[in-house]
Length: 215
Image (tube, rainbow, N blue to C red; front, top):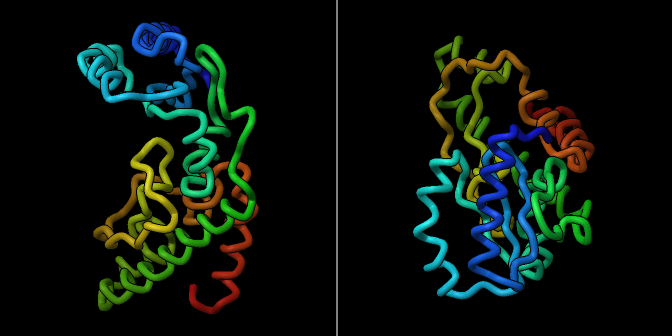
C-alpha cells in the first residue's frame, strides 16, 4: 500500500494525539487505506474517548477517517466475527508507529470460507429476487445476467465499513437495477477484489453456484 506524504504526516499527527491520550497504554497505529487507520491500546476507558472527541474535526481536516479503536485482545478475540474485514486489513496495511497485532494473529481459512459462503448465498437469494423484480424488462434482466448491476452486498464486504458479526449478518434488500459505471464482469467485481487469502474460497463457491444450475 502506498501512502502520500501528506497522509503519512497526518497519520503521524494522529499517532501523536493517541500517545498523549493513552500514554504507555498506546500500542500502535496501523494504516489500512489512504485515510483509514486502526489504533490499538492495552486498555480503553470512557475518559479516553472523551479526550479524543475534540480531536476528530482536526483529523477530518487532515483528510483522515476517525480510526478504529480496539485492544489487541479484542482484535484477536473477534477474528472469527470479522474474518473478511480483518483479512482485507491484513492484506493491505502499513504500521505507522508502534507494534501491530496483525503480525501475531489472522483469520482462519475456515472462518474466511464461512464468511464468503454467507455473502455468496445472500447474493444468490437476492439475485433471484432481482430477477423476479426485473420480469418483463429484458434490459434489466440482461444487466443482472452480465453483472452490471447486482443485489446489494452486506456492508462487511467493504473493508473499513461498519463491522457486522458473521452470526448477525442478513441479506440486504436488493438495490435498484441500474447500469454500473464499471464494465468489469460479476466475477471480477465479486471474486477478484476479495482479500487474497479468501479468493480460493470464493472461486470454490462460484464454481458451486455455477454447477448448481441456479445461476
